[in-house]
Image (tube, rainbow, N blue to C red):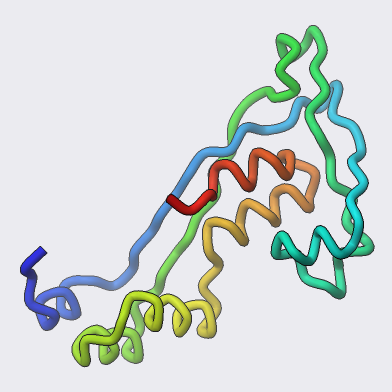
Length: 134
């Protein structure tokens, strides 16, 4: 965009990305079982993959046969700390900056969506579709 890195560093404190996920209908959501290996492949923590109780959309009169009723937000919050500011000033790649932010505790949109799916609030398909890389 042609903005000098020192201006970016001086101006930013936090960056927030958000998306809306459809919430599973409480009246008709049902259990979904996936192999532990598939869950790990999708990004779930291997130590928790065997205890997950995923849900899926079915459809009923209460939700207009969609399986979903309402929406909820997922967030990715990047705290622009001193280490990240120095990386920007050095001209480090976006990928390196993102990796460092995740090492420092940033939760990506995908991680947030998978947590909602693991809690039975949305379906795995919805979490993956909304957070699909372009």
